[in-house]
Image 1 (spheres, helix red, strand yellow):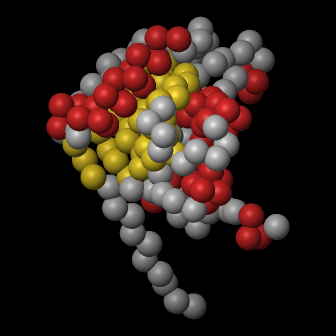
Image 2 (cartoon, rainbow, N blue to C red):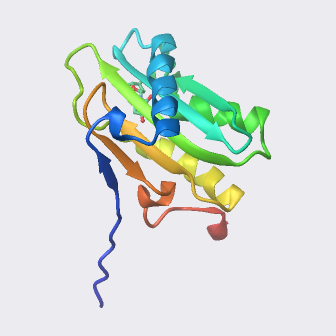
Length: 160
Ligand code: THU
């Protein structure tokens, strides 16, 4: 038996103003995208925005359903919009912001496991890393250089 230490590296920005200008603009689109979240059950709104290599920004937000598991997270709404409309355009960056009606979210809200798995599929498909930036409603932003930094030991097509 041997033990292996896995490490991941993140960057932490103190506020949205500290982000590079193009990322700040991308995050503002994610914040704006929250407005169209349909979250009557959780009252937890998430916005996601994706910057493509051709300069286009594609957004998404969470869409809930009375049959709870039929709803969908913002990140997957956004990335599937990209995958269905621009399947051959490289994804450069993803920005995520979340707001709750229960509390002001001051800590970064990380994408859920199912979204990480979905995002990793497209990162592997395009053979290039996707930078991920996520925040709550205000405060710090965490950045990872790649989806796989959020999902070590991932399941992928090599096992099929
Ligand atoms: N949600 C997202 O949109 N993204 C995540 O990564 C975590 C959770 C949504 C799903 C649901 O509509 C609400 O947040 C509460 O879980």
